[in-house]
Length: 183
Length: 183
Image (cartoon, rainbow over all chains, first blue to last red; front, side, top):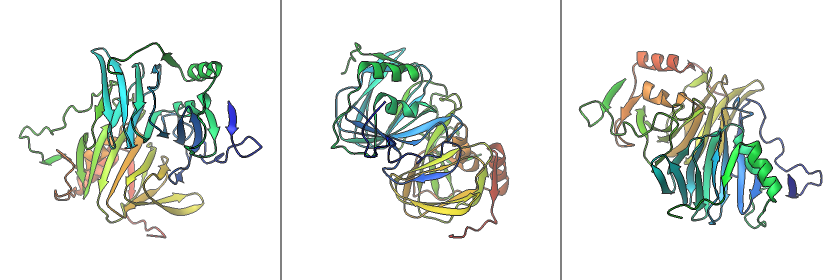
């Protein structure tokens, strides 16, 4: 993992310790949490599996419009999308065929483990993700830690070994050749 | 359970079948889900433990300002608050004493199982709750099913036996005599 955008020379991010790491109560104000940057997107972990006995974790994604995220599957992660602000098109493969849905504020999507999916951010977006506990730190592992949500910071593009290690750690499979019907 | 506000004479709510009841993908537009009314609040289940192997469920609460919800504990439910719109003050008992926090849009709160807590809606509010799977239908059991989010519908005030049965079913303990320092 790299730490390019951390101001503290110790290598510890400004948010270190913001989550209790065990089932203890806490509050976060908007914008607080564990920040990481991956490509042009910021991912802010607000709750981890460490606080929920592994049941679920939660993260806020702050994203500019962009290219489609490559198709992928999670072997053992259930994942949800809740749009706070903006618009995101989710692409999904089901036994009945491919489908896609443009999600707007207040809209919700559920992708269980094992389903090939992708998404494309269509407008500047904030969306809340809730997923099986442990997955929430994937973005820290594939991306780079950051002190804050800073859309002006440069994109972080991981090298392939980092991408592969993060995917393996979180039991994800990417399908970069997949093209969606409605893409 | 009562069905006072359902338009369908069959007693089945308009949203019957909106959730798949198993780990299958689905989308909901804003305002869709399983609706129930409890006192003046609407609770809309967007995801249940049936879809997540029991890991977590999610619900949107649409609430007018009101009195404090009585202090209570969940024996085996971790619960979160994410404010989409409005303001909610959460009251909490910790080993170090009582605390409270006014949550505004984008703010987040986590209350693990076993912690006595309460909340008071301070402004017209929409908040997203994520909790241990199974808890999400508590509001249907203590309240009444409804076809839609309809703030103009009359409040639903359960009788004590319904309240007690719902609390017992969801392993909740209410502490109606508790008064918070900052209440």
